[in-house]
Image 1: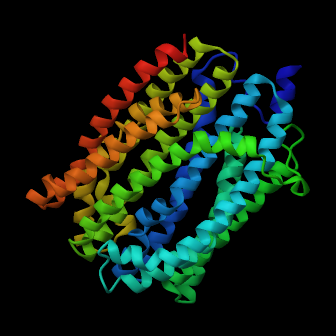
Image 2: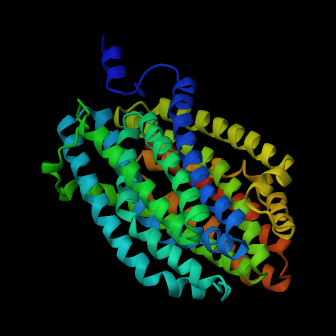
Length: 451
């Protein structure tokens, strides 16, 4: 009877039963959602690359590090929301869940408004600091300003999805992305090919699609029959819940932000090799996103399952969650990476029509994509620590291993031998350093927290 009720409510029992099948059922829709979202973003790149030329491709594709730099801090708060709500579920505190849900949506609106203003103001200066080629700069600036205008929608979708994930519901966000993604692709084709709007059309299509997905998430929450039900009239900011969310989410967001700083430095170095290198790297980067989203899916599974079980004091189950999530994450990313590398010319050709750009993209794949099975080893481990409430430690260790190491590499090793191959080698090297550091942190903290 209880299981039927949970199924109708879209909830998953994370505290009992087999873990492998449940983690897969949780992670697959989440991975599909992220990959689908990236596919629709990639449609932006593909359409402008095919119908608006390499400059437009570079303007859209080379913007990812800037977008992530400004967005990641706030997206980190959604991780905190996920952990806090999942912990309350494990502890059986329904009133706390209701208060947190309304606080989270209010935070999403505030964060979105801040990002909209911030993105508009700093878009041009940041792109100039990144050594963006002069022929690309005007298009890239326009794209960023329009893109950030839709940040309130983007935040609502991400925070709302985090609420649903806390009870194991990763399917509804997928439904939202399927519908909004089709709208995105359709508008891309219409605005770029028919109306010749170029990067402006791509940006408008993306903002519109984000608005649709945000609206659907809000409707799902408003129609929820359980503790996650959203009542717009009851939106509030509970100081207690905000503090808890920020305490867990801020380190995760700061990690993502600093991580993006290192990627901005890398993108700046790539920009120095010219438009073809920017376009080829942007094309290859799409496939790195695909494999990373598999990593992210099992990372989210680990943090959510661990949060609920830690709240219920099921410590041995927490240890098993870590082992299962790492194994599934490594296998999933490994298989996907192998497929992309073996078919690299075909896959790169989807986004870049120019042979020179494909050559640069293939070089990136052979130096970076091949090793994309490594991030789950530290990402999932860090997620397990966050699920137990230890968010600062994995953030600091990851910031040093994957961020500081990369910046040091650029100004030492790459400065000594400034080739693309040397630049790309920074990824596997920094991943190895991070794995060692985060594993050590888990060993020290886990012995105390899980005893």
